Image (tube, rainbow, N blue to C red; front, side):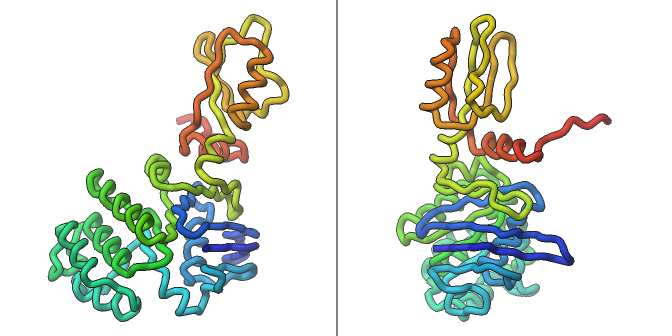
Length: 297
């Protein structure tokens, strides 16, 4: 559905995106993650047709996005920094959206407004940050988009409202097959909603897999060795630490291959535990020299 191929974008000689490739299948919920400055917002602005690529291509449904109103009419975008017309209320913004999106659903907009308990006559700039996020979300969903692009979509929402927003988004995906690209630093929440993940680093795609493949490719092993034994040399160890006699090792590989290698050395005990998305993120980026350093204060 969304294809980014060999995308390059520079600003004053700095390569914000460097030969980037990204694929979001139709109907997928794709989590785009990476450290600050990795290029996530720049990718999003290309996918939504705001930026023109220096080189490479960005297509949605096989069609280029930039300066293509027909494609853009099927994309709804909620940025991290939301903009509303200074004096507009929710009803006026809904009318504005209706003028752009032919499939805008007034009934759904009103139903969601009641669900979020938002006053349609109050100026949006008088809403709290969380209420503005709710308004942006209901307007985007009411557009009935083919593609929904979200940048930190639940930032500023309380836990109950966060769950409601994610639930409505997943309901829209299930009912209409909407394709969703979401960028967020809250990896714990992304793990609950995404089925595909891409990790960006310095303008390049570090890795891109389904969530199941990503978690199956790196395992956490807890081991008690027999005296004189150690991890097999053929294992690719990303990190290791120990508490007493129990050693914890983060190892790249499938559970089957790691289990077979550990069985071969006959340890006293070992157990394999799947990593969370946050742990995968930390250890993958640690392997490319992006990790927490000890700082002397």
